Length: 594
Image 1: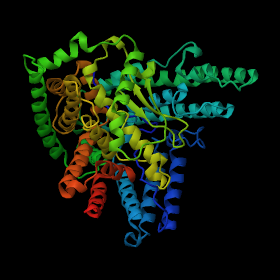
Image 2: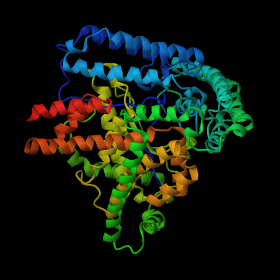
Image 3: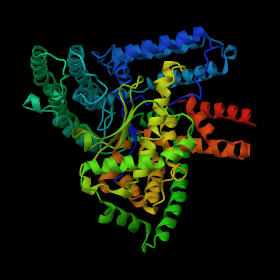
Image 4: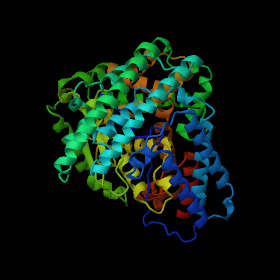
């Protein structure tokens, strides 16, 4: 069993970030006009992207769902970014204090990278088997995600939002059609995964629908009249909006789109696809590294980590090659001790408790946001990976570490449970995202926005802290951690090779299985992920290597003046940012420590 570590969001393009200072920085010396500009930008952004607002606990737009893949919306969004880029330039960077200069640099970068995306028709590929509004809507509508169902108004807001989903779906079909005409189409393998996802939402009894969840969990304060009214409204909406919309999407994908889907795997097989991929690499890594540079880095990292794995294999006395060792770890019954999902979840909580004493030495600041470990909902578990869903900024909704458990008796302890927890939960995504959201001194666009390479780079860097946190004492758990590390290195190789070198889906699956302990099913899901969301998987290793590079640099520069907890605070305290901006900021900090 292998996991991928995606942070799941209502708006797939967003990856949330982290932050918190030892003491919240004073606003003294801040440029008030700039602060007002950032506030206005963020207010305007939430109106433009209401799902984003709901995800952070801002409930003003809970009844809205824009047709965000339509030509009209895209023109509006492009104008939005262009206008704000123009306005930020009216402030002289050299007149700002250091904190405001940091915001200026991050904001300018974000506006430029967002504007560049409009050079390409990504909307012709409106959703796939992983990042898809049809899946996100299911989570929101189930009543177990960010959409609140506490008042009658909440319930009515959702019905309005759901109505708009059918409009979005019609546009998605139109966009898929435009893609067919222009040669921008998804691979067949992905479409075959999407069809059953749509079919699963087709029910004949509304009470059997995922969208009936809020009706099964009415607040106690609701009157019988209110309950009766909402039951009727939800049943009607499920049968007249939900089911027909998903049926239409499923029929279209199966009957019209699938015959036009491509047999190739990568973007370079499509007209202009190579340029689209190069842009995505830049967007997701926040660097100017070329795909070829990343590919070569991946090859060298795979070689380095394989050498470490070999040494562990030999240390436990295993006779046979590394691939045989992978098979042994994957299949030996002693590595699958669980009987129930509850036992799996308890094992993750045990990891949390074991490292608590050392966490206190490595972090001066921890989030106030509550944290929970939950089993992934059944409706999406088959295609889901372990993930972290951020809590709300006010702490009323906890950060949740979701673990998909299809069959507890097959849940393998050598899959890297310890490293997975470090990455997805603590001190990875939960610390980073929660600390950022809690830091009210940051402009909101920084509190609630983020860069993939920083966000996932931090989480992967946290995996490397296992031994310092008292974990990885079992050689098989350490092997699992190395498995996770090589997994991210393999991504650098296959993601680039699929999209620029003509590597096929099958070749990529084989390369992955040859170099790590992963099942064919797991490798297939991974490779299909890279096919559907190119470049995203590159951010992990690129970001983690940068943070580790900075730590090593300052350990050498500062000697006994280097304090690890302070280093971690400095990496986190200003939240997510492009890697080049992070390096400049951290170098300035290190200079003050000498």
